[in-house]
Amino acid sequence: MPDIYTQDISGCFADAIGDGGVTPDALGRALDATSEPWKIVREALSEDDFPALNIAYSQDDIADIQSVASRLREHCDTIAVIGVGGSSLGGEALTALSARRAPALHFLDNPDPETLARFRTGVDLARTGAVVVSKSGGTAETLSLAMTVVPAILAARPADDPQSFLVAIAEEGENPLRRLAGHWNVPVLAHDPDIGGRYAALTAVGLLPAALAGLDIELVRSGAVDAIELNIGSEDGREAPAVVGAAVSMELLRGRGARVSVLMPYADALAPFARWYRQLWAESLGKNGRGTTPIDALGAVDQHSQLQLYLDGPDDKMFTVITQDLDGRGDRVSPQLAQVAGAEYLAGQTTGDLMAAEQEATIESLVAHDRPTRRIAVSRVDEAAVGALMAHFMLETIMSAFLLGVDAFDQPAVEDGKQRARARLATNKTGSTS
Image 1 (cartoon, helix red, strand yellow):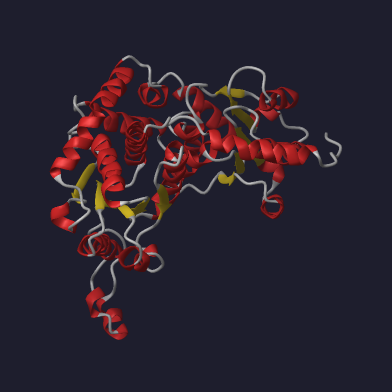
Image 2 (image 1 turned 135 degrees about the horizontal axis):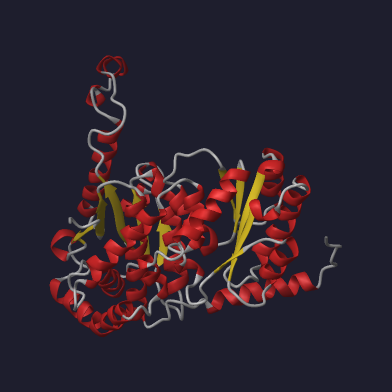
């Protein structure tokens, strides 16, 4: 079976981009440093001791996820997915693949009162449901959204069984979201306590919204399995794309000062995936003064908004361009109209031909300007491809954390902001609740 994705790092080497590019010797040393961490990761995966990735091999929960999705689709025209960060971004990344219009999914991930007002006035609450997601069950934004949106839905559906249009996802045990679910008589799917929110895209957190959108969630997991197997087939990591990607990224940081990591897919459906990556990379690596800053971009749109900076601004970035096979796809430009417009170079070309040319041109231009550039290629952007990319970047992030000497799974600085927000709220007057 051909590789589900491929990685080309030739645009990161010194012989392509000059001084500051990675040399074979430097990459070899960086890969030497990954040897022991990679052994640990491979052993954990083989012993079913790596929950965030081992979940990809599981089939036990698929039927339950599909059953919940079927029930909600039957009773809802609109579904609000309420969650923040990892509780939302994985689902958004997957559902972007769907062309299904019903039920309409609305990701409510920010307690902006204007957004909530527009949501309430823009949907029929009597045909609306909700999926409320919080790993800990105590995320303030999620609780605030749930305690305002869900009562409005319940009030609009007094004769309907809440279990037919509401569901929550949270860790087992006593927590605020489970208390609310009990109060509303709403079923709760268990969130694995060993899988952090930003690593939860392959669990029900990401797969339930995907199933609601009509996607094949088994393909998502099988794509992730293919990517994992592609990587762990390399015992020392030297042929593992995720390990090599981590080594290149960290070597460019060390040797070139590439403190910014730009992910630029050429597919509208991967724009939410790039935002998912941004959180994964930032929250996993940004610790103790270390890490690189992730930026999400979108080709070809951001050729017109960011490429000038990338080519002619500070030389402090590594670029990853995600490409797909686009030649011949899409509608074809009428030669007559192209002649009228004076744009004969577009005559007979498809929209996919243009995108294909632009993704290649962007890579060539970045390398020509001595910017370190990696290509990750998939044949098509579908469920299996996104599952594979998720698994790849989880592994690459974890290996980068090993090289940086930070914990890929905690987020201590985030807790400071949460505590300060709660302290400020505690000084405010509280209103009545229902």
